[in-house]
Length: 362
Image 1 (cartoon, rainbow, N blue to C red):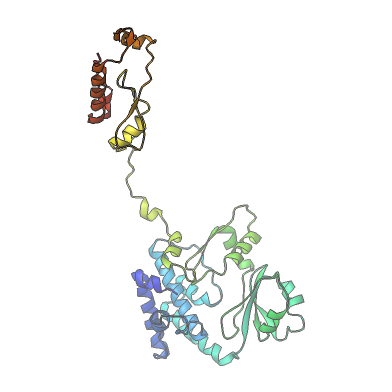
Image 2 (tube, rainbow, N blue to C red):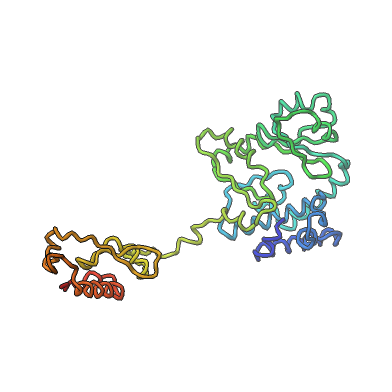
């Protein structure tokens, strides 16, 4: 998560180390963000799914991504925070300094661990609030509650009885268990405070290690915006995909390509053609000698020509004059003339020379 950007983007690397340094000052070296995020090679080795490591890591990834985007001249007119991304959003919006934001992350976790009983779970479901309250949570509402309302058809529930809820038969309803060790926080995205943002914006960039809110953003946009156009929702990173390629579509291409000079196209042929190619292309079109005929395309190593001669035609009538005892014979000198014409065609340095080959036949 973020390792490829860390290795290839110096600014992203710089911010990860900066946040790691601030976090180490506060937790007295209890654990290092850099070690969990970068040094440990596999997810199994890392504590990345441990809430105590996950939230600081998420904060660092989001802040480093935001810094990288801003360096590419991508400035958001509005920032919407969600769940554990509150602290990163507050820092990017210049409401908290980096030191203050890191302290909030640390102390929030400390208080959460002290006051939250372990064992809680969270489950994302594709249902409305009314459906969840009247169907999914029926008879267990004292154990489970709705904690996140992302849109009309997307919310998250928290509590101890997640496994029981999963066992309830809803084959057509999407359900996904969140990989955290306890349940926390509350947020409601269907809020009048966000209505103006959804009405004014049509491009949304989800700054996270993996896109999970695209569907909810689209539903909220469609709920508050009656225009026919659809919002453009872009991810920054995707799990197990090349991070630089995933992030690339967010770039403002005009910042990189608007300085190139525009040249007028020169519409002239630039096709280099070998002699063999030219012969094959033009063999059935060019006749350079009245008797030699047209060169044939074949797989033989020797060149061959084909000529149909009708002595009754005016252009061939002179052949009737070569007789021996009333038998018309093809003159021997004509064979020499044909051989000469064939050699001229084969050895001519230019295709244009073929049209000027000898026509001094006997």
